Image (cartoon, rainbow, N blue to C red; front, side):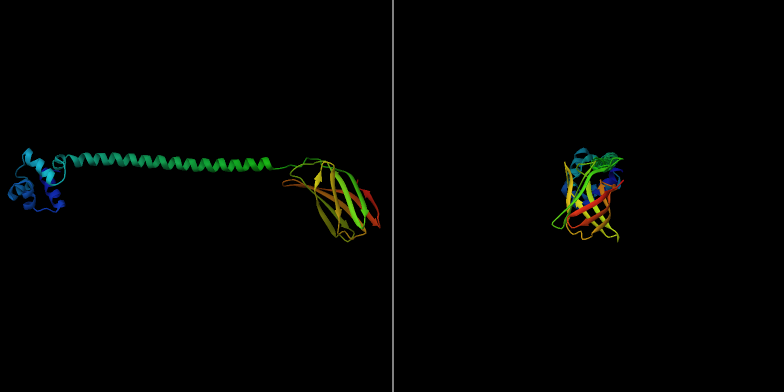
Length: 220
């Protein structure tokens, strides 16, 4: 942009009349008019005074600053866009990596906490006794440890079932069927469960309760 147009636009932007600007730099309105019309150019001293009065640099009035500023602004905008892109990319990678790591960690913990049952699970040392009207039972599972659960189920000939969760110790499983009212039990089954699977093993049949006398057949 030429000097005369830059001077005209800057003066108007400052809200000054030609007379007001002339008064600020101790010259005449006619001089201002001639400069803005491109009929003449101020000397170095007047140029400095114009820049001070309009609160701009002499480079700005001469049309240099705007070009430099535009180039600089474009470069700065380009740098900012690149930085924003990099920041967004890093953030996306961090979120993805964080989610992947968390997911993998959860999966690993779940896998590590999973308890599996062996292919062959057995129950031994099965026994029953009755005292004071209550049936006591015992058995020894082949798998013992944290993560396993044990249950014994009595099924009578009418297909009624009575089940009891059983704690386990190093010497086996023991418990009492406190509410078992049946006199004849068709089958006795032990269920051994792990994290997501279970095995049901028939341990006795024809369990008969006659007073304090108990008899049964071991399952084959």
